Amino acid sequence: MMKTSGMIIGFLLITSNASAVTALGLDNDGVPSYQQTENDPCVIGQPSCKQPDGFTFTNISGLDNDGTITLAEGTSPTYTVGQITTLLGTTAFSIGIDTNQATQTGITLTDFQVLVGGNLLYDFTADTEINLINGSGFSDAVLTGVDFTGLASNLEVVFKAAYTGATDGPETFFLISATATPCTSNCFPTVPEPSALILLGVGLLALPAVMRFRPSK
Image (cartoon, rainbow, N blue to C red; front, side):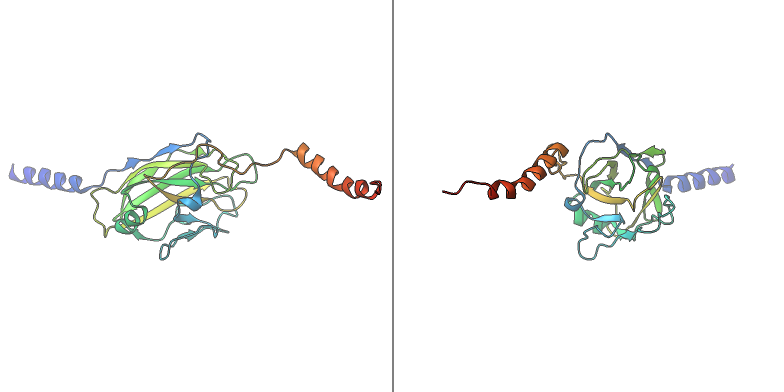
């Protein structure tokens, strides 16, 4: 009887120390939201990322030439809980995804993981096509629900991303503070209509002729 009780207690101790995995949410509504350059740092991305001093990222340029990034390829450098929360100013944050596609078909996000202290704490595993937003540096989708409240500041943090269907260069995964304000209107520079550009061009071409035939006074 004592032996059985000991086995049960041992089992409970092991399971109580196991880390529960929380599923990340995904805001994928195709509406402009967070600008990458205003919400750096990147953790996985391309050379256009502008990083604070001492905060590095994994450059995946060239790794997705086959259209796919695996978890092994899309693994960030190792950070600490304290490093991230100090930089962002909050313990809660999201991860912006800025895609870079040559077609109107988005990448398919197959996995995104947040490991803390060597344990998988947050995960997104639902294969999902990311909506495209035509705008430089804006997040096309946002992974939500990460919160480091109560975690020791010295715990190591690693981010991992995997996706398929890339058609034009690397995608970017960047951190967004819980206090960041998304763009809701006039998010992109106004682009003149093609017809307006044509009329402007014709006018500029005709200007020398008009000036040449003006009657002299």
